[in-house]
Length: 199
Image 1 (cartoon, rainbow, N blue to C red):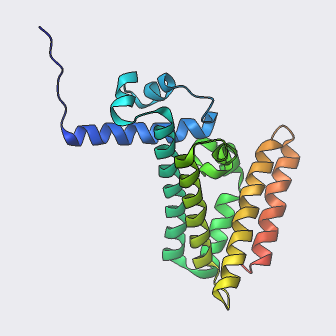
Image 2 (cartoon, helix red, strand yellow; image 1 turned 90 degrees about the vertical axis):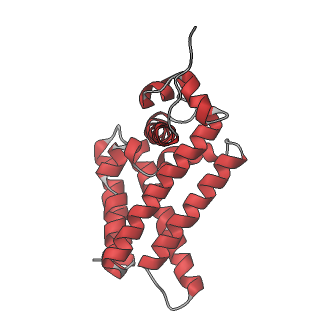
Image 3 (cartoon, rainbow, N blue to C red; image 1 turned 45 degrees about the vertical axis):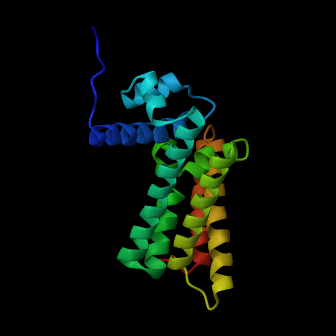
């Protein structure tokens, strides 16, 4: 007579976190539609059934994974602002985001650059996660680049974040032409630094 071994609540939470982290990486590398539940389970070291013990569907797991990845991105920017503030934080944000490292490592980069196009095709939960992630990045950018008015600071932040995301997406699209891809990053990075008086 067999029995299922029960795991502790703490172990279940660790398994869930491991699953979310593994899914965040693999989904950014291969896309939400490009990865099945079996591959996600394998990447996390859990069974197929283990995925469904934590999430109702692959879409729920994808939303949790994207949310986690976007929280990490916003958290990195928050750390720059808290550690350095102002122009120095802004310069670090720009240099780290609009970079070859970010372009070449979608699995550990911002979910918006690797999965943003899928947001519009996803369900409401995924769209909400992306909207919150974009809002959080804009808020952190706004803290790093204050302006005379709240409205002006928000406008600058939106333009900066959109420009940075666009640069990484374009650089990835042009990666077969390394010179062009590198130029996109270099020129946009330089323009952002100059336009924002960031050192």
